[in-house]
Amino acid sequence: MSLGPAHHGYYYQDVLTGIALVDLLLGKADVVTVDTKEFGTDRFDDVNITHPEGTRLRLQIKHTTQDRELAHETFSQDGRNLKLDQLLNSLLTDLGTHPDTTYRIVVRDTHPDADLSVALKPVDPATQLPDPLPGITTAKYQFDPDALRANQPWTGLVSHLDDDALRLACDHLVVDTNAPASTIDFAAPGPAERALMRRVKDELGVGSPPNTDVTPEAAAAALVLPAHGSR
Image 1 (cartoon, rainbow, N blue to C red):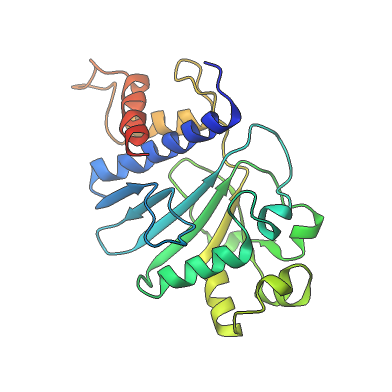
Image 2: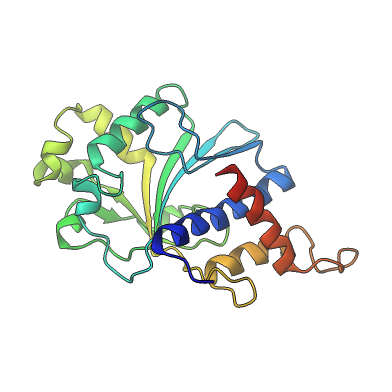
């Protein structure tokens, strides 16, 4: 299958949504919503997961077919709908009514470029921050509020926030880079497809007795269909 970058990105979101739907089938999630804004300026609407204990995970997924650094323009401009001031405003608006929420931006881009790395710092592995979704292994970063204050263009983008609000937003926001690639083909799966297939095989029992009449490939593809329909 040959798809343009935009359609490849939509498919990639559907694969990751399929991974989230496994949690719904297992009872580990109560609700999974796709492309649903909670309010007009919501910037975290791609995939939203509500867990039985009341915690929420809100994912914004940005795909690229190129191997490239995560450019500072991703957050200093709004070409990818990730301009930092808009992200933080959206996060704080949502967090005000849903305090048990984590916000994650999942990108295929690699490490931050030099201008972004002054403010976007690697998460200490000792914190054992979980992956955004099971099997979606990433490099994890968070914005440093002090560095945002001290460096351009970031200081201008956060000047409207007081220190407490800025620290709160930075504490709840994770940027996941190096997300696994997709081949758009369950017959020749990439890492993203394999993550979904592994979940349906290992956790749902697909392909093992008494479910030998369904293959992991077919079950994984079947989960992508409602993800696509929801989007």
